[in-house]
Length: 149
Image 1 (cartoon, rainbow, N blue to C red):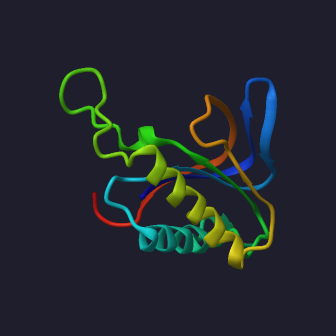
Image 2: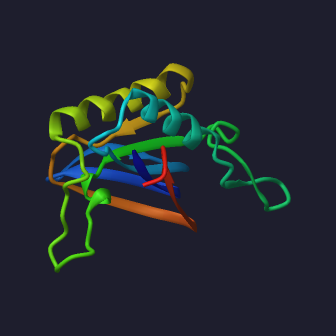
């Protein structure tokens, strides 16, 4: 699994004109599932993201996790994170998991976080055409993977 994790002041996701997820201070997570990913990848990535120390402490150093600041989380599926642009001009998505498997692991990832994090967690809509508004703070943007690509 691969995630683009952004520290945000706020973020929201819309389907058409309807806001389906909205958060304040926290993390915006764009999540992709690779064709050979398993539940263990989702568990690893969920734990890693929840423990990332990307929020400033009282000295301004990035020493605090989303849990430490009681931040909010917005998780959005984005299969294009596995787009391969090495050949030609049209990305290949052959590394992305098929939709059925990707949805299952995307939902498992969210369920796993909800098991031990009780603060606000919002989600996008799987396979929907979404618009994402992100007010990146810092900016802080990281790519986190469950294993080497």
